[in-house]
Image (cartoon, rainbow, N blue to C red):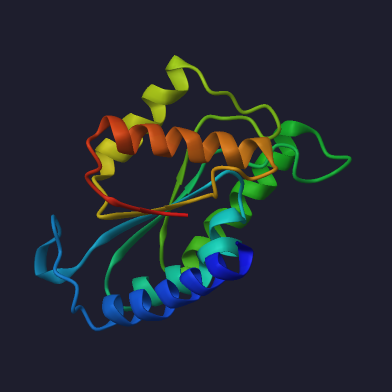
Length: 170
């Protein structure tokens, strides 16, 4: 199964990136063939680690790319308090977005304590609805990290509730 999914991922990455780079994919909502892409990750560094190359290629091709951080990485620096770690990791994410040429957006979840409840479903839905993306990249839904899985499940729920208005990739 992993070999097959890897082959599918590689095929998508090669063909999909080439199509976006030369603007041969017609835009649904965006003007001039440009697309709005959201990469939604649980922590600062997740969007860059999972899709950094894709993000920079799409941004350089003129597409609008938004890097969404579900948390601010509050538990990302061992031995550092939640607020200090969040401050450092947020600054790092903002700097990474400048380098990649993408826009950072931060949500309200707490690293290591993310939740799925009515309020969180609404928050994700509202965020995605506000930006009206053509394409969303999210974590694999059965990820072993709870924050990653929760993030993915909230994205999937918004996609379903919104009647699948964008392409969703894991």
